[in-house]
Length: 351
Image 1: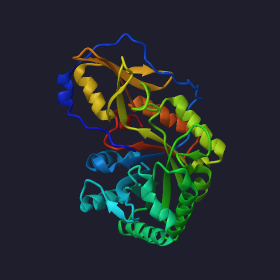
Image 2: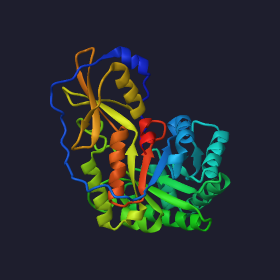
Image 3: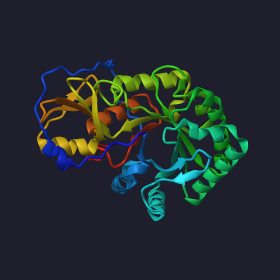
Image 4: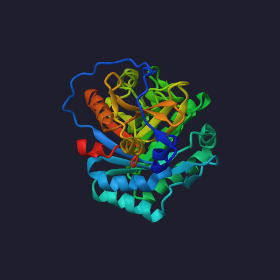
């Protein structure tokens, strides 16, 4: 879950002028018809990112009534197995966040990541003494912080780590369950197979309470322009998870609150911002969003002062609601919003 580059809106406004490019949109997605939306309640989960925790907390305070759960990713795993507090907030603000969630019956999980560095897991996966201390330390942090459990987001798992990671999660879950605590695990997504980014999703789903699918970034800096997550791509992800045997009541679909910008001529990546920033950017310049019905996603086009044409794809309220409807169609556990503070403000009014 990489951070976005924050850019001042006023500087964006003065740097760019806007017009609609004539070149066709350079992407292809598989249009997948979705069934009529079912009357099925799902969980809406918010996630707070360490790099923008203050804004995430503001969004949570304003919108907690729409959420069933929130994960606060304020902790990181160190290579020696220890755990660091990395939230750009005070410990008092963390405590206030937990109290607010508790007072309003919103489940709150302590979020921990590895900064996408697989080597940080080696000690806790291969040294039994280190693993035992790490699990006890993490459990104590959860208890002392009055969290309801943990949201684990260790990414870029390597093939040699697959089995040890499953064993680690089994040990962690055993300890947490002895304290009546909850555990969710984030998994980067694939449209086929049971090993997702090095994680054996079948075996892990048998151990933990919830599988959070990081189902965004269908297109990005590594590709030409396209949606953050087209509806057809998401449907294939869900179908694969179900086909592999992951219980539907454990599957949570991730929805990003971001947008991405590409040059039209070279189809090379320019930058990423939050959805909120891009909507303000477009509004100041008088640019209208264009809805792509095949992808169920929005985009807009502009031309910079050097005459280069751009296309921006983003996850606004409309595209987010389509993804929520997809979750209802498949009767999965719910969706999570990555990350609070970056979302389209109109989203909450439409839930």
